Length: 155
Image (tube, rainbow, N blue to C red; front, side, top):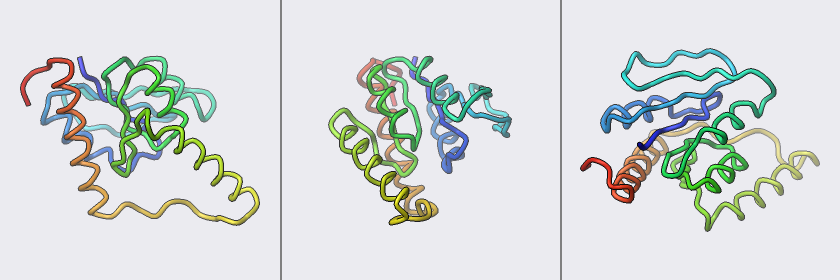
């Protein structure tokens, strides 16, 4: 069964994910390094993992299965999940695919080098309403695509 995993510690689109999951009756596992509030909604569970900063990523990569959907901004985690046959959506609504993950990893390394040298400071800008709308649309399309592929209930 299609399952949604959220790399939750810095995820800005959790509410949007819960809405899509409720619409389709999908289970959601929120994976985080510390306790956080989750909605009192059927199928939504919280998995708190202890350990280093990559503990949540490791947990997701160990539990995700083919045709599940992972929501993360973490490019190495996206790569690990794609290798297991999962579908991955970035928090800005951009899908990670086998065709673009190599470029994404290379860009990540380049930007890390530029941050080390001080050429780049700061993080990404906050999400706009348009970004959230794009994310919702992409997640909805991804759920429908996976359900068609695995023969799930009609959408």
